[in-house]
Image 1 (cartoon, one colour):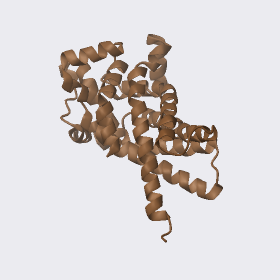
Image 2 (cartoon, helix red, strand yellow):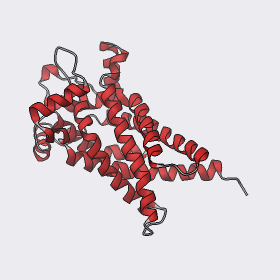
Image 3 (cartoon, helix red, strand yellow):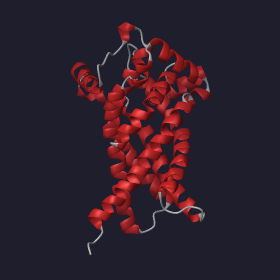
Image 4 (cartoon, one colour):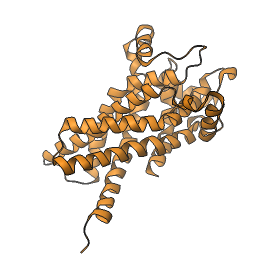
Length: 275
């Protein structure tokens, strides 16, 4: 539930980010164009797909990470930083694979506003988009862009969850923090910034691939990145950083605090011996 609440609060930033990635418009220009052409409702286009993505991708990646973290901690005691990165990356790969169909529909629903009428996907909602793609192009086409999505997911998860865990340890060792919501908040903000800086180039390339409308198959991830570098320059790989971080920071805070609290509740109810 907390992920859907977070998605609702930050969805306008998701819309703006995707529109910036498929055009050369600035943050302000994208916001103005959305409001001028579609109105306020334009900032919530694709919300159903975004909520479905949170329910699939986020649930899977965080559930797998928490399970692997507990297993490793139970077997090895203290977990070092490379191990944190490893289990976080694996959970990101798997979660992204599961969430690719909903991510594909999300990108297409948002990108419709920039396409001419004859090339629009015109999905009524996230469920309709999934059904339409499966019927028209086959079930396997739901995983179009799965490779860049999984690479991005691995980078995001590997960075977000490992740096969150590392930041918590460092803040606790500093002696200025105690275990609690404030510690979780500060660690989340640090993790969100590092995650955005490392993952945005893959996110830009993923968006371009999933929104491909040409007569041929979309280019590969490396080819897409090289094409962006050659035609638009290095800075274009970080296009949409402001809305990306503005969305990622509160999402990371909500996600990590929720996971911490639910994990603590799980341990208290199911793993703590009764009196």
